[in-house]
Image 1 (cartoon, rainbow, N blue to C red):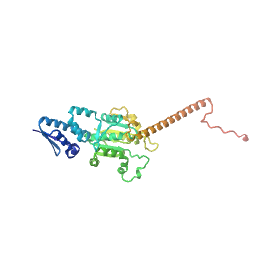
Image 2: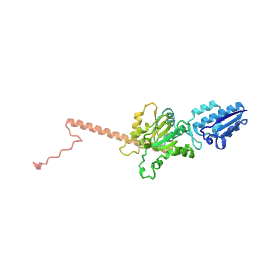
Image 3: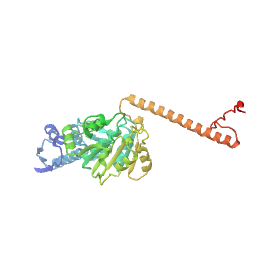
Image 4: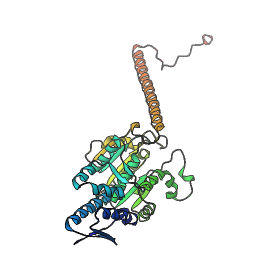
Amino acid sequence: MVEKIIPLKDISLVDFLGVENRNIKEISLSFPNSKIVARGNELRIQGNRPELLHINEIINLLLEHYNRYGLVSVEDVRSYIEQDADSISQARQKDENLVYGIQGTPIKAKTPNQRELVEAASNNDIVFALGPAGTGKTYVAVALAVRALKNKQVKKIIITRPAVEAGESLGFLPGDMKEKIDPYLRPIYDALADMIAPEKLKFYQDTNVIEIAPIAYMRGRTLSNAFVLLDEAQNTTTMQLKMFLTRLGIDSKMIITGDMTQVDLPRHTTSGLSQTVNILRGIEGIAIVELSGKDVVRHKLVRHIITAYETLEDQIAQKSEERREAIIQESRESRAKKQEGRPTAFDKPKPEKDLGEE
């Protein structure tokens, strides 16, 4: 009989072994002539050599699965037992799962543009994800960050957004800056809560493995070995966005999400997102992914609402352009009349002379 010891380093045992070691028990049922024991942070396998090698191969595949998704379910174990290594490898290459949720639900890109976002993040260090509300751009970005952390590709996640409110005033909210801005970061907290168990999420936040802060807190820092997400980037100025982008450090990635139809900046303040995208487009290592109403993954009515507003905006833009062209044409005609000595619409009428004054 041969014995093999497999160390389980930097692994959540309950996520890998299952509750009450259910995953290991599932393997043992398929290999009754071998003995598999979980002891501390290691697995001990005893059996004949051919069977032990087969079990070792399955365990290694499960470890790779865990490092990618952060969780191993009984169904995953059965799948790996029933398939050989080559077919499993081919299936995994086609798998679009990003991470598993806390209930074991796979989280994946659901639309072509979301898949383009995932691909862009794999091949570039800075990615702009632009699109209307409900297209999943922030949710997918958070999932990519969580996957990178679980796969140990980065040491921390930094999520930030500008402290700009939609028609309300932060100053009237109680508490310090963190307490003031937390309500506006609720979508990000909700996404993280879907992907990371509550106790672990609290530990990550307490130890700054996951840091959530206003964009002003990024000034002067170098963000290395981190997955950095800037949400609501349409509410940044050009200088703020320049400051943020130049924080990028070694072994880091950035995803910037924004919706140019929901700018909440004060009047006469221009969003820096559109200008920044235009000047950075085409630079190697920077990708721009544009999502649309077709990518909306909320209630089907949201898609119709977005389409209706886009139609209205197009009509307003068209009327504005027609008005601009009419003013230009009127100005041209006035200049032509002035050259000919004829009165124009811009000339003030001369007051009539009072005959009684003569």
